[in-house]
Image (cartoon, rainbow, N blue to C red; front, side, top):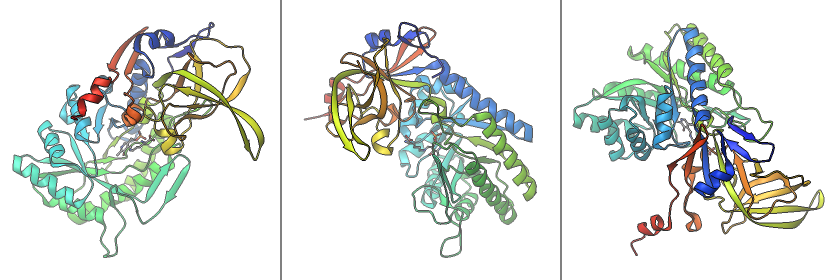
Length: 446
Ligand code: LLP
């Protein structure tokens, strides 16, 4: 995060707090969040999108995608920086509400929401429920009608545009679970159109808009523009056929970040300007007024603001022979692993690690940082140069773990999930405490 500094004595500070002190006070492994950095990124996204869309003449709401990491404090930070909160389940909704986020500033997602989740959302007066199937249109309509309320809904559509990393694939046929396809099916009708018309037909639903999310860790803006074009056309077609011109278009999240030194993140201001210009030109072509826009960044707000602190337990040189010849790789085991960061095992994701808390003049050696779980895929950092004198007791920091680390953590091998600690202005505070064996055993009724 931008609040991380290495002092001349080798100690690393997050927001003015030394990692040695953090580890002593909170133990390891621990997720450390730089509050000021989170806030700055939230603000940067909001101001970039507000400025870009004001320029073309419409408003925008930035929803923080809570799936990346949601705690009560994090939801409050997002809200106090002017963001709304996007939730993906009743659990995330409960955290946002506990934080005092007003229902009107919350969205509820999910491709298979339970009746209890829909009811909780209606009771909280959420600003939007994003529906994901025809079955769900009827389910939300029935539950809203029973309660005598009108539910504001968006219909999640699939535009045929998928993006993520450097991939960019455009297909007419969708083979994944999310959204309703804009393209016509075998019977000649479009599932997206059918769902939009079903929403319009139900008096207990108010059709707020159309939603599209094309992927995650996107480093190139053209996918957002391509998807916007499809959604805006769909909006114009619906207006022509039914007279209903929806007020809002949500373009989802997916803004990519840098995980390794030297990688380039997607910068919010230029991306926002490109998307805004493209939305404006498509609407002008179609002769429809501009909708209000919303976006849902998660990773880009919280990812770079977090790091994970580990303690090294064992160090073991392993002789490896491959196409490049025979070499030594130093396996450095830390006190966590795939239970606190599943992304390397699940996606082959790359991270960067450094020995922190001391300086070292030792020659760097090729290392692999691994966890303490009972499988060989339990890798924290596939490939990194670490000082050759790395040893048991060293503190290791892995950068950019704020998103999809704690939120995807597990208790695999009976490990207790690490705390989330916030550092701000030279002090630290526990946001979510470390799990204990009592927490684990308390769930087991014997
Ligand atoms: N909105 C919707 C509807 C989404 O499905 C997602 C992510 C987001 C927003 C936020 O995307 P972001 O800005 O954070 O990229 N666990 C994976 C990422 C899964 C993302 C799923 N949906 C990972 O660790 O990379």
